[in-house]
Image (tube, rainbow over all chains, first blue to last red; front, side, top):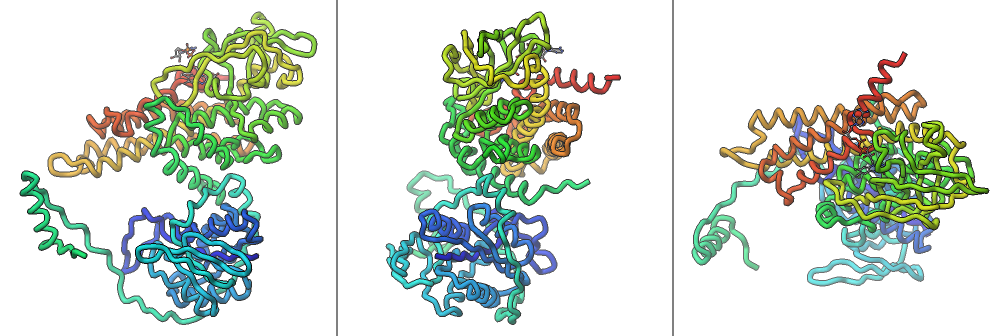
Length: 250
Length: 379
Ligand SMILES: Cc1cc2nc3c(=O)[nH]c(=O)nc-3n(C[C@H](O)[C@H](O)[C@H](O)COP(=O)(O)OP(=O)(O)OC[C@H]3O[C@@H](n4cnc5c(N)ncnc54)[C@H](O)[C@@H]3O)c2cc1C
């Protein structure tokens, strides 16, 4: 069974975001595999270790730099990679079209991805890919069983878990709690460079979203300090939460 | 001149740094306080191939170049210098005599055991022979197809946890350096006992003990090189390993530096973060200079090793400078923290205690200056 994993390169989650000339400044920023995608890579490698998957292919749409994210996934244990070269300004629609095209050519039995990217957080691409390819889609999974041409997925649902059975091929996106991604081993790192990575150009499509402006979130405002006896302090705190912060009580 | 790391080196650095952040830093203060040797963490390092970074790829190890080895040691030491000592003393220091002098069969045996998870220890120092390593008195006597070893080794890192030793002994003290021999010794050989664990100032998660040899029979096939080549093998080993200790010292300095920068932004006095005071800023600037110059020196020494160029003097420059830098930077970090730097609740007092060993083992700061001066003045 061939498993394909979509991987996005994102800013390090600890990176300090700054704007320059109205755009997000990526100079000197540490780039990593989107942590949610890393979980999907780990899930795919575990399927291979269990003898269910025979090949794990990594696909990333992005600039040349995204090659580093692919190599990291290869160092973790994936078999080969495909870099779909695409302008970094591509929106979710353009990304999904480009990735779906690459996926169709690979004809995999299972497509995994993280359910959201840590940078823009739009959570659209896996769902769009499923839609374009006409495949079933299960989101935020925390476990997967493959048997008899079907995938049985456990995923988070409001107040509990949902178990979904779908026929494969399917697009399945992971929740972070699915697994604990491994560190690439020394051997993995040394072998990563020898593994094949194909580079293809993305299909040219127009973005559907036009970004008008980037703005940084407003800074944190100062808290308050209440120095009273507990009973008075509690009342003041409750009042502050209700009337100043306007915390909603469910 | 190109200061960029290769793609692999960047990946190795990131992996080792992530490992330190997630698997070492949250636990190392407890290892230190309780004098714990972190077996589980060593096992994790082994599974990732980090405990075999000194084992060449053709013998089943990770086969890293010297610069990558230094990078790994720096990043692990940024987490815990005790653990970095365990790693470096095993796969680099203790395995280096094998690297520089063993034949194929010997390498297969020694490296094979390391690949299976055995730790190694380098047994040179004795109660009466520290800086004067040439003055060792552990005896080796040829007896049939064996050598019989007798003597006591002092301050041996991994002494009580290793399955393999590289041991230096003399055929006859009167022969001086020319009488030295180097051996690979299996821990399970009858006659080997381990002394009590040293109660140390720092690197407390590392295991330091005496290793005592009483009529220990070592097969001749375990002799590294020829009889009388022991001192040469030892010097070659230390030349290689000094750059590694320098990297370890940089890791300690880097860790202390990062803490100081972070704390200086958080700690408020006189209504502002202390990093607004120029006095603190200048300390931080000095720390940055120390860390970066020390890093450049160890990386240059490693790069020379990888290029096959002479590196003896550069290794000593790096070891000496980085050891002193680690001590200075860690002392400064305690200063930036003020009273909290003196408390075990905060991480910098541990860096401070761990830093001191960098000026002592594998040739003290004085001995390094001696080596450097000898090299400068040699005709
Ligand atoms: C925690 C720890 C781990 C260690 N691990 C190992 C290990 O794994 N394997 C191993 O073999 N050894 C190990 N050692 C031993 C270490 O390498 C020695 O302690 C070190 O080389 C110094 O020797 P010494 O302690 O006998 O000091 P000494 O040689 O007695 O030195 C005392 C002082 O005199 C100075 N001095 C000595 N000779 C001269 C000179 N000619 N000129 C100027 N000054 C001089 C020294 O610089 C030092 O300040 C370890 C030591 C420690 C503390």
